[in-house]
Structures are given as C-alpha cells and as structure tokens.
Image (cartoon, rainbow, N blue to C red):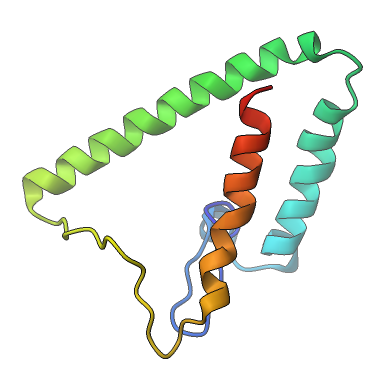
Length: 118
C-alpha cells in the first residue's frame, strides 16, 4: 500500500510510485507486487544455503530499525502537536465492513510467524 497505494470505494490513497511518477499502469498495485516478487523475493528464495542470506538479513534489520525510528519520531511529533486520537480496542464494524474484512491481516500474521523462527 505504501509503494503502490490503494483505491477503495471511499478515498484514494496514492502510493510512492503514483506520487513520484503519476498514475500509470506500471505503478499499479498488481504490477508493483509482481516486480517485487520477481526481482527481490525470487533471487532470495533460490539460494541453496540459509547462510547466504546473512547480508540481506542485516539490511532488513537496519531497515526495520530505521522504520521504527521514523515512526517513533513521527508519533512523538504528533503527540506534541496534539494530533493523536484514542486507539480503538475493538474493530469498527459498520455497514461498509464485512466479517471477512477482519481476515486481511491473516497473511501478514502467518508470514511473520512462519519466518520468525528462521
């Protein structure tokens, strides 16, 4: 969603590619996912030994630390400016949300728990 954005019925969220280059067929969500899978994930999967992933693991750890740092700074700035809201403890189910929309987080959770022990 950050890279290619999304287009729900209500509001349109532009991703980085749309903001930088405009809205084109090659920066749609489907095409961005396909390119990411072919050029980033496929080469990493083709290694025969897990030890070969030590450099990509180090890069991903550094990127995760950078992400947490940026998010923390933005959160602190929002707290200081008073732009925060009280978080919801339960999901908001209204007439636009179905029960199956709650399962959109399942792929993220499954991937996290599957690859965590590796």
